[in-house]
Length: 470
Image 1 (cartoon, helix red, strand yellow):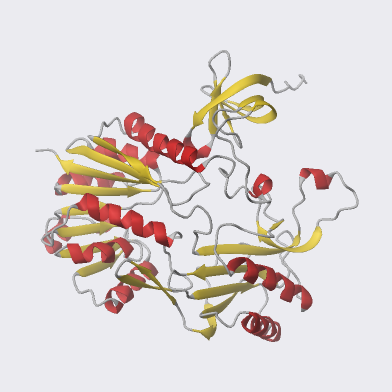
Image 2 (cartoon, helix red, strand yellow):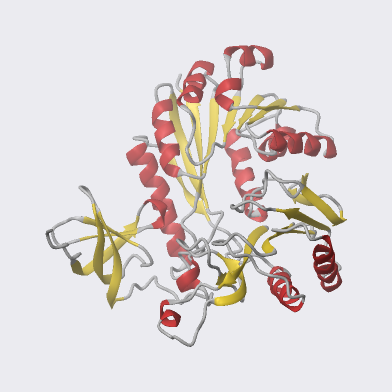
């Protein structure tokens, strides 16, 4: 048997930019591309190659020769291990610059399009405490840092509540303070852990698939309402009652309190029944003039304040004057459709998830909106010639597809419908660029603007306006 080749160390790699999925990129002296995590453009590092492909390599830092001027001190004590806010070590203005570049490269290189305008990225006013929903996991095994692993006096058998680190499904990083969700989120999480330990409730073991306390979800709204959801592995009604009563005593301001029993081997909850223990079965969120009922299973943009900024950008790009017939595809709970409805003659929303469409109809009624129609079903199956005949040709199509982008059949139907305008909202600039190239058969790209929804991460939203070529 031949000897296993040792991975090579490349010295003095200058990190020059950010590539897809937030990985930093540099080049070796021979011009080979190497992707590295955890570094900032401008850093000069020694990199151990961990993976080699025909066109690129991947590696990890073994030493720093010099640090970037754009590097800042992370504000979270868990930054080095949590991995959630992977750009905390980069100045926010630098984050915005690189996010803009990621969108620009996707449009120019993948989309092979040259818009008339690349508008500057819209930053987020709140770079911390901006999320309205957080999920945490209970575990009887604490994830140990590399330093702790070398200390034989430290055991990982501890009851903890926090996040899964990447690659460790059965261990949890015990979170002391999280900067993603405003008060009283941290207090609720810490008190939940304290009460569970005080009541001697067992924490979940994902490897053995046993233990009582499993997950918790905190949902908050800009209207000041608060929803808590707890997932228990066992249906022990006495234990559930004692725990939830203690939570309510500590946080009487809770608007809505649910629990769910999850005996499965995975943490997916949406296929399970939720039991309302206290309060209303929803909380109210508001974007502009539109209110939304948010239930325990509802999907909603996780950054409410910046969602309004994003939707205002959609309205601006749409150029509506009250006379247009609008299709809103991949409408979700109808948030964009309802938001733009006052500027349009009629809006038709299509979404694959039936429960989301149920939420959309409820929210439409609650707001007294009567010029929207919603359909549940796969967009590629619903968007047909007969659909267009029934609802009229669109003057505007708004599309906000999942990360995979639009199905080829949907793109083909867009080309057939020949709507004068398309506003394309995307959480994945790469697939947005691909779809824009496909639409270029009949459409010109007028302008593109990135909107930062998730500061201190590599995630980015992009809004593009396309117009039918005359």
